[in-house]
Amino acid sequence: ARGGPKVTTIDWTPLLAHLDRPSALWPKKIELDDVGLQFEGKPPLFAGLNLTIDSGDFILIQGPSGSGKSSLLRLLNRLQDPTTGDVLVDGASTAEGDITRLRRALAWVQQTPVVIDGSVADNLTWAFGFDIAKRKSPPDRETLRGWLDAVLMEDVALDDDASVLSVGQQQRLSIVRALLTGPTLLLCDEPTSALDDASREIVQDWLERVNIEKGIGVVMVTHLPFTPRRARVRRLLLEAGSLIEQQSERGAEA
Ligand code: ADP
Ligand code: MG
Image (tube, rainbow, N blue to C red; front, side, top):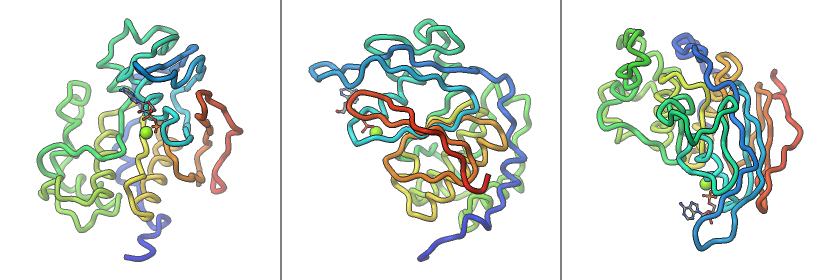
């Protein structure tokens, strides 16, 4: 529908109630230490990048297409190794660290949503199959229903095949699923690029909420304009091989 749902009418309470603050807050800090990246047969993408991300930060990385935004995000959870320099978690090199633990702590949300084969309910309860979540009992159907409604998916049934949802619905589902694994930080690569305006508003609002109310960090790459409503956002510009930190800003409704 034109105009779409108004974000201000969304009640996030059922979902927020089910999310923990990251329990064992790890890592507290991620650093790019003089990081350079060059792909074979290509000129260096960037060199000498330095950045410190604290666990509760909301960071926006913007920059032109091809500037290396996605690569930078993949460096953080070690899907990509740096050519020079190092990526540190709490001061220790990720090269020798526990990559599985790192990737769980830094949940990756891709531009094209990834849904798990199965129903919508399967996607929502996926996290509860992990060791880390086993101490928590899986949510009942009523709770799951409440979560879907919270992200404005009233017309979606729990038993619907997740692969038939619209891209916007799949993205909302994949973000909720990622959050339920209990990450310290969400790494979001253009999470709203494939979405219509209404879904984009919902996702942005949701990311700000989990950041403010649950202390979950967000590193969001986007080429789209982003005006925070509530969160304190650190803006970084990746352009021509350098990372420029701009003034942080706080949403007007904060
Ligand atoms: P952005 O997300 O800002 O558009 P990317 O990080 O996706 O930028 O890509 C930056 C550049 O690095 C592009 O020229 C891209 O083709 C190149 N690139 C990215 N990943 C690889 C790879 N695995 N191998 C070779 N080149 C790559
Ligand atoms: Mg990209």
